Length: 372
Image (tube, rainbow, N blue to C red; front, side, top):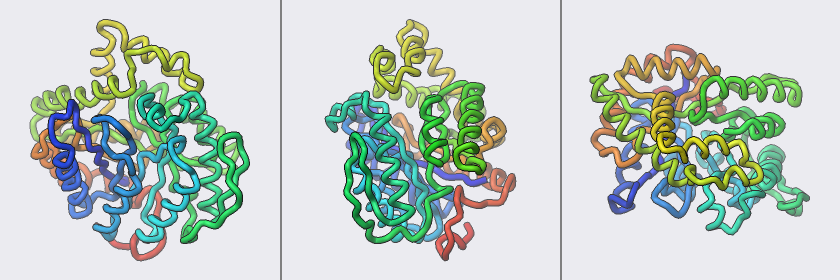
């Protein structure tokens, strides 16, 4: 099983100088290859302390330059906030420089503060995402970008450097609504799962996605990638205590950043499926219940418990890749590093035995041939 890690650069309540948060999370990214992880991932967010990574491809370029084997993944590039032609150029350039080590993740965004900051109407996000994704995916396959849509009007131009390898089989999208899952199947890309819904709902939506993918593409969908907020500790009691405090704390930052205690998503075109979540979050005990539920989906405990939690997600989704977040919500760096090292030493090798230790996609060439 492919095992990666992600850094997210959270600074809740501005408790520390931003540059110190960066220094600590970059230290974790530097540890990933020596500890045997298969990939390093980054996220994209803007304007707040929720996640301070406004350019995920720039971060991944830094990681790729400091490593030789490990893959780099975007979780995700939010296409409605970008000119898709520039994204195509940046993706092609990074992939060429890294020797084909990029796993491309794309999405459409959920934070109103970010749409407002970029002056992009949030109710246009789905249509903008689809048009941008169509341009991006076609450009990465044939080396030329063009599109004549409602939001994206691009005359035909060349992508230079030309993409050296196909992105089929190594492009994923974060999909958290049934409508989004259908769009991803039609675009021919995989699914990145950040657990936040009941597993039964996730598996039902995956089944729908796989059916549509097969109908449209005459092939089986790639296995999804599952991410999880992770805390690993020798003591089950301490692991529970830290998970409640910090993984639970991360979920509270989600509630704040996405304004889940409001009601705007219920009336926002393309986001109607979030209405029930906002309704629960507004209830007096709803936010606490959601926090406990989110905890139940993540990966925390002793090494044996963490292993079983990842296996449970794999059994439910068919995922062959797991991406762990070790630093979040103000968790002290020493604890994040200790958790990552213990997971790498005792959990990652056992996960690698489940299936061949291949990456989410295996690019050809020397960069993919080295072993941990």
